[in-house]
Image 1 (tube, rainbow, N blue to C red):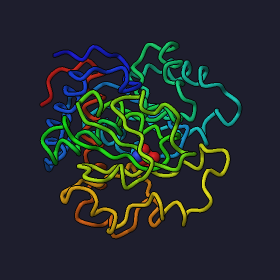
Image 2 (cartoon, rainbow, N blue to C red):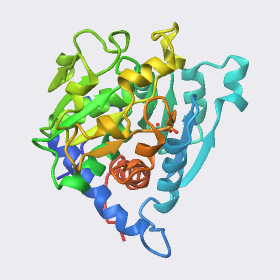
Image 3 (cartoon, protein in one colour):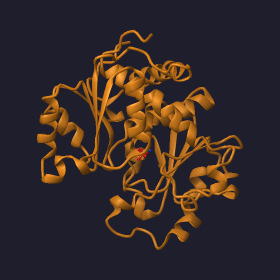
Length: 310
Ligand code: CP
């Protein structure tokens, strides 16, 4: 099967077969990551610009590592020390970068939909590393890969997503991807943090309590409170939030005994999850990060047209 997309902006734009292709390619890429010499010539001569308008540890670093492992030349731009601080617009920044002939721009931006805007202005590939509260497709893919590693499948699973659903691009990409792959999603969070009509995003059940969402769940995905996107206080205090929507060793027992615990990071320990759970045997949080490199290698590889991987 050939991947027909030039850009990867949202999992909403991909069908089940395309998601399966990205996941199976990521599984192959993992073999490279396990070698002593973790480098193949697949993207030699390609130039990738990582343009991150918002802070990032995991996504930016793993896109850079992914590009380097495929032998691409990778360049990182932090707008805090670029001409964006002098008022240059996103479109002008993109056109100037384009004059340097990159093959891929990987961008994170606070504005939802900014990647579609950019994709209409440039002739290189655009990969979304997170846009506002819209989507974070590479996170959605690495979450699916981590779940598939554990269960060998994605269909028929009960996946709970708990926390600040309204402001979470991770929740949207997880819902889009997992719904297409046949999982059922149960969301829970403070009423101020669950968008009305969330059921319409996919195969989603909106739960009144966290207990309802995580009861007999196969997978629990905990979300960070996105204070930077909330604009106003949406909860009385973090202690109360933690009491009703935090995951701890006691309420974790409501889920299936081998339930997978995940979090996209960064984690507020003691708020959305207790350290006992973060560091406990059911936590696959660092496995998610490990899978992030392979998934991003697969994304870079396919937007460049695929081909042989040595
Ligand atoms: N999960 C995630 O997007 O983490 P970063 O913000 O560190 O990239």
